[in-house]
Length: 82
Image: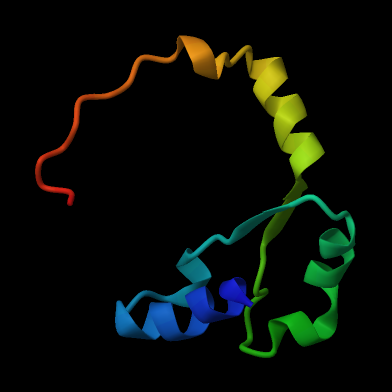
């Protein structure tokens, strides 16, 4: 549902062409991959969700990239962000 909101309401409110928005969904369930390709998931004229990764695929990509979250340095705080 968020993909639809991003490509309709959000795009209109920010005056962004929905064709310039790429929506990625990360879900534990593989059914989202099929759901994202269904014709009714493009009623707005754009695919609601452009890409779908399962959490397993994301974890595999993180491992392949050699990321170790425990060794990442914490960035300095931004005082402008509450």
